[in-house]
Length: 141
Image 1 (cartoon, rainbow, N blue to C red):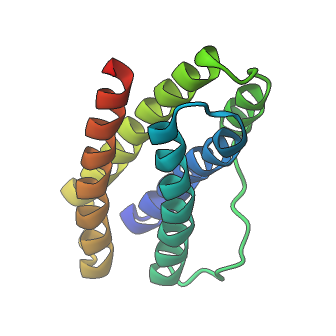
Image 2 (cartoon, rainbow, N blue to C red):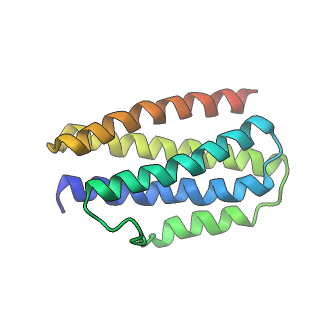
């Protein structure tokens, strides 16, 4: 696979985990700031997927095939009951996912040459770092 194909596939799959867990969080999260984060994350992951698919010349409606690990994360997450345990699990899942997303973007920036995809990775990196800082603040708060 080319660096561009790898970047697109890994970003889409990791983003789908963030999207799936955030959709679940909308119904279960108790903390207002965390619920707002989940709302923004759902909207953002939807937009990022559209941008990546457009840059990769994929059909916008093309379904991403999730790995067994990614599917398991989402399904296991759904089974956690609402409450403090769920809120903590959501933060941990988002920190882990955003850390992975940042690694994917940095890897592409080190290896990729396509100007459009590099621009996407640069923009995504800044937002991911902001999200990680917000999540860390909510974890402490």
